[in-house]
Length: 123
Picture 1 (cartoon, rainbow, N blue to C red):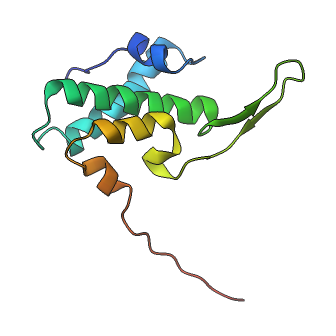
Picture 2: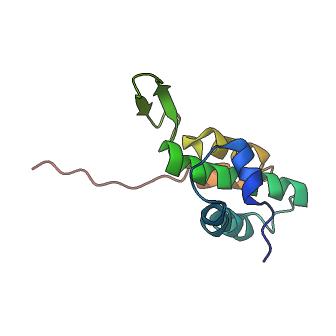
C-alpha cells in the first residue's frame, strides 16, 4: 500500500538527523500501518487520514530525536533536558496529540486510555 506522506513532509514538522530513507522505511511505514490497521475503515476522509499519518510519523521521529519532548535546551553550555512532559503513548509528544486531534472517529484517543493492569508486591 502506498504511503500518504513523504519524508520531506515529516521533516517540515520535526527536524531530524535521521535519513529520509530511515524516516520513510521506519517512521512513515509504522504510521501508515497504524492508520491502515486502526483508521482506514472508520469513515474518515483521505485528507484526515493523511494528516493523522503525517503527525504519527512526526510523533515517532520526535520519540527518537527528542526522547518524548525537549523540556529545556542551552546553546553555549550544550545542555539539553528531555522529559515526557505530557502523558504516555500518543499524548507524549505534541505530534501525537495532533494525530489524536485529526482523528474524528476518536479511535486514537480510546487506544491511549485503555486501563492497564499492574501487580504490586511488597517484599
